[in-house]
Length: 90
Image (cartoon, rainbow, N blue to C red; front, side):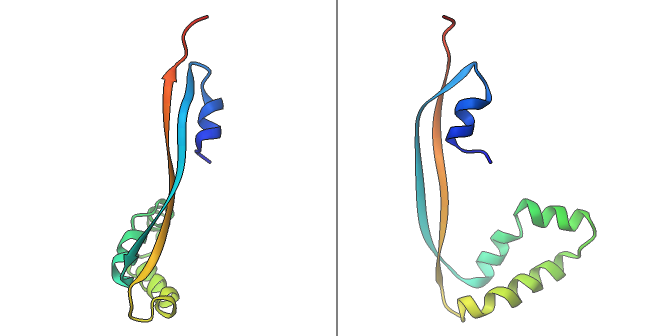
């Protein structure tokens, strides 16, 4: 998984100087959230392997309809930012 700890170890030429984890909540409607989910890499992989896009979209709707119940729901997105510098030869 790509995270600040991994970045700090992945290339000895660089060092992580700062990083911060964050979480952002956004109120979304079901259809907007499904549109977002359709951009995920696992969806793209399923489509490349032959699963019809409409079938994936329908499964998402069937699965999430009871959660959203025709209302906006706050969806939490977690992430981080990391600042890296090239290590000085020493």
